[in-house]
Length: 62
Image (cartoon, rainbow, N blue to C red):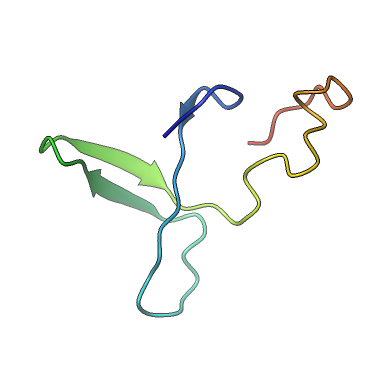
């Protein structure tokens, strides 16, 4: 899903095995057959209090 705040696609993934996944770069294959690199990051990668969209916090998460 495109993120208007981060300027890139974001999504959730469920891994069948526990592990230190944060920071790993994987290849994501879309239903149209195209491959895209993706980086696994820790939650939250969103703005749960909506401080960014309300203009309270002007920093963007990395």
